[in-house]
Each structure stands twice: as C-alpha cells, then as structure tokens.
Length: 357
Image (cartoon, rainbow, N blue to C red):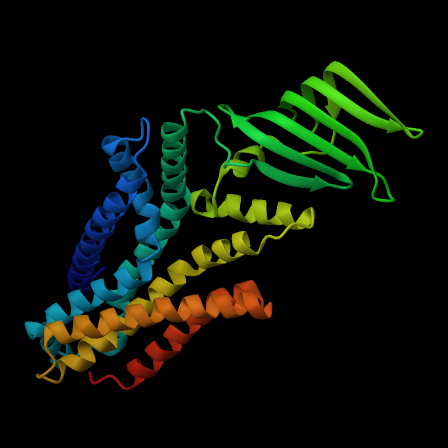
C-alpha cells in the first residue's frame, strides 16, 4: 500500500468512525428513553440500559449505507477543504488511483460489516430480547406470547413454551386424516429431541378417534418422528433481527418446505446479504459529491454534508417503498433487494464520469 493509499484510508476510517459514533449515541439515547416506558417488575433502568446496549449494534448497522456515505463525504470534503485533493490532482495522480485508494479500505469495511452481521450483532440482539422478556415476565420461557405453530404433513404442532436449554414444553399435537377430520390430539408436558427429528414426549395425554370411538389414554412417554430438529429449535424463539445470516437462510428454507410464509425472513436475509454491496455503492456515490463539488469554492463543507444526509434519507425511503411494492406485486425478493443498490451504483457511475479531476 502506497503512502497516498495509507493516508486516504486513515482519513476514511476516521470519517466512518466519527459518523458511526454520532449516530450510535443519538439512536442509543433515543432507544433508551423510549424503552423506559416499558419498565416493569425486574426490568428496571439498569436492565433497560443493558438491553439498549445489546440491541444497539443491530439497529445502527441497519444504517451502514448512510454511515458509509456521510463518513466518506466527511473525509473527502475535509481533504478538499484543505486543498489536499487539489494537490493530489495537480500532481498527476489519475482518478483510478484515487478510486483504488478509496476502494481498499472500503473492501475492509465490507468484510467487517459482514462479519459483524453474522457473528456479533444478531447474537447480541438475541441476548437483549431474551433479557427483556425474562425480566418483564419473571419467566425462563424464550418463546413469544402465544407460542409457535408448525405443520408437518397432516400434523400440526403448537409449542407454547421453550425452556432454558431449548427444551420444548406445554406441547399440543393435532393430526388429521385425508378427509380433513381430526383423528388424534396429544398434549405433552415436555419433550426431548433427537438429531433425526424424532421427539420423545413426556407426560402424555392422548385422544384418538378409532372406528368412530374417541379413546383417551395417558402415557409416560410417546415418540413421534419428523418434527423440528435440535438445530431448528433455537430459531423458534427468534425474531428476524436476532437471526444470523446463515440461520435466516436455513429457517426460510425450512418454512418453505412446510408450505409456510417465508417472505419476511427471505427479505431480511437478502437485505443483509446485499448491505455490504450497498455500502460500496454509497462510498462511490460520495466520491463525486465530495470532490466534484469541491471544485466550486462556493460549496461549503456543511452543504456537502447536507446533500449527503438528503441522499441518505431518500435512499432509505426509496428502499422501503421498493420493498413494499415488491411484496405487493410478488416480485423476486433478491431482485427487489438489489434494486436500490443498483440505482445508487448507476448514479455513482454517471457522476464519476462527469467528475472534474
């Protein structure tokens, strides 16, 4: 890496960190104040502060494209303000070398963002959600109110509790015949789950329709195959924000395999998967906004930041509209997720081709 590349990389990293810290502070404070309204039982101000800190990375990372845009403008506009970009241009450095110097730290930012989304933000968010639920309800149950439902063939299972260690509890199973008639109901206190998707129910109360007669029995244990696997159990207590990318993908595939709606999880997966690409597109867009405007001496540093903020707001609103229209019209989820990024990249390409350098 040349001296120029190291210098520009350092300025970019400082710009990104500055914007990140400002937005994290603002959103953290707002989130803490809003969450104070939910104080209840052991969920006191200290627990609210801990919850806010645990869930803050996931919320702030949702603004990663805006952070990249404003951070890049802050760095490059600062260089332009001190005439350093002018010196670099007049010394014969071609535009492609400037873009290369910007691109290297951007690749590092993309990799860091992906690793954070996969290994840090989602697990921390999950811990925060479980902390809030347990403190507000004095319960070790990690499922949402009302439990969860699933379907396997002609069987429907209702899981009301998921105890610590992901032990299923308070379970109801309903089985229908080919005519759609209910022929079997099972209620179990708990269950152990094998890797082969076989569930061993304990404390079973069974009602079965045999030759038109309803028979009721109690059994200490009952084994039923082809239900949730141990790897899928943790996902039942998670929101999409608490799921890692790999878990989001596997869970959406599982929902599709049992004919359940998976659009929310697929959308979250593709939005996060394409976020590093969106960050790169935003950095490219910020380059001509900072440097091209810098050739006009009446364009102040504040104006450039204002333009960047406006672009960020328009991008966020536009992306939400595109996602909503995509779901309404039943368009391809990967294409809908990529569309805002492609628009930003095209705009960046046009502005770069007209950039005064």
